[in-house]
Length: 533
Image (spheres, rainbow, N blue to C red):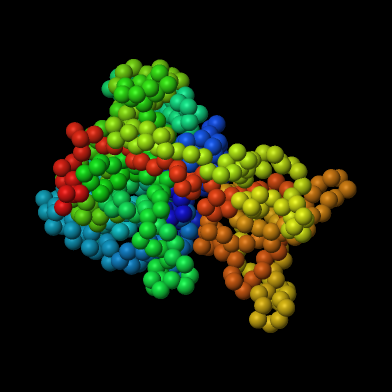
């Protein structure tokens, strides 16, 4: 299941493995993410209409040369959940040479049929990249080259990448300059438009007609997938195994506001580009704080990044495509100066929906004194955290909980022998560990915890004893087993923060604005117009 979307680098990198494993090695990781309301309070009409999280930190876990492809370790559970045609397994994680044999053979047959003239390498990269083992295309590429005895990576065509150790791909900077897309023409900051949240601003002069930035797209062929449906009560007669939601739609996912759509189609195209999701709306039809559009979007003409043939496919046919294959580009409609905010027209339908929202909107009860985790983290920075016993008399807001940075690994045989039984033999075992420095640098280590005790040393340094819990965001590989109660000692204050409880943030407000950006009629494919069927 997807818990959140991380546009930008978080969506564009492919899966790698930890050092020493078989496959392209991961060379990046993700740290903490920033939280900022951009001046919008819960009592504002735009509350919950944009994400307050931004600038997820991406860092190198090993030296990376200019032109090297970026890989991230998605974890063992990812490859099990995404397995297709035996391409991966829970036991081994990413595909190995042996586990890919079936997929490689099928690709080889397909290539042989398509290219009997011998121009094998010219079309190979795209075919392999779209295969079930696309995340490991370099290894498949090399195996196919060996099997067919037609070429090696050394005499590949200029459009194909080189392959370095363990299947990592590399392009020369000259190739990237010609075939890639610049990702640093814009930066994000608080928008000049009141209530718009963050916006995108030019980092350098941009000439009229120049590409500002690409928008790779995740295609969703059935927009109802973004519906929020009412949960069924536990005793409901309608509840069958795995069916926990009713047919009653009570809202739309926030992701909808970052997607493109058209009234005549069930299709949605969700932008996962670097920074382009911050580009806000302005038009000449209404007052946009005196600002007008200075850019527009169009289908990319970049071969290899945008499959123009997909524009001729129906939504049903596109439903079988499991990779990114469509891309829009934002283009300057006039000269833009550095520091100027980039603005586009979201369309008449979007604008009318926003005006209707403003006319009907009323603040939710309690909006004036609402406090979220970010407020407490700022107000109580460096202050003592109350234990669960103290919180009975001095409770924190019901919408927040304490969370700790802790990296869990399964208990060892020694810990098994040293662990304590609970109240009886059937109770979970109590495992005690000490906190280790460095765990707070990785955002994926953040998880719910309960403060059991607080100790203050003579030098004023505080340490905490906490019980570490699982929560909905805990990575599958890091779950504390049900038969274990994990107690961590010597945890420093800076490893403990407040986080918002599920479904309490502004994006879950029942009257938060939701509407996709409209695709203009002139670039909307006829084959996607399926609502009349």
